Length: 158
Ligand SMILES: [Zn+2]
Image (cartoon, rainbow, N blue to C red; front, top):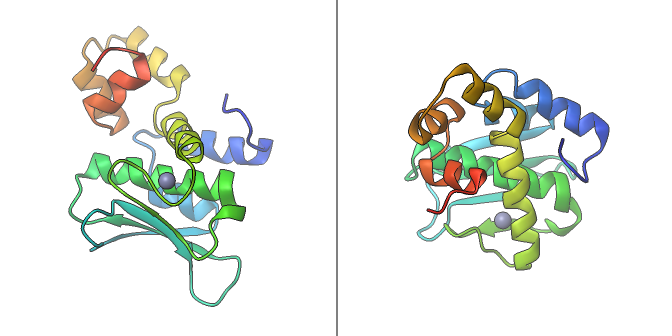
């Protein structure tokens, strides 16, 4: 269960966790946010901005120079800003590769936490381990994340 999210949002996320890895393009779309892979400035891994003139439409951009797994985590991080920090998006949030932005570190930690909850639900991890996945790398591959991200999720020193 994901804390601090309305039930409807939780349900939408859970539906998109039925097929793994989570399809971040589809999940974003379910929340009315369009996700793009684009060429971003150096030192930028992702951003979320208002999409055109429509005041309630948002778009996520992830860097085309990052790996697929990294892009997926960045998209989940930016979508988390939309779900948790919509009031703070303003003219846009620009995240560095370390997921630092003009927002507070606490805000960034919250976005990273929700991103991990979206991509690596513990129930699903436990199911896969019970079904016989034995290595971190296989688990990471199944969830479409880096082995580093999976280790952090499992509390294993990296
Ligand atoms: Zn961020």
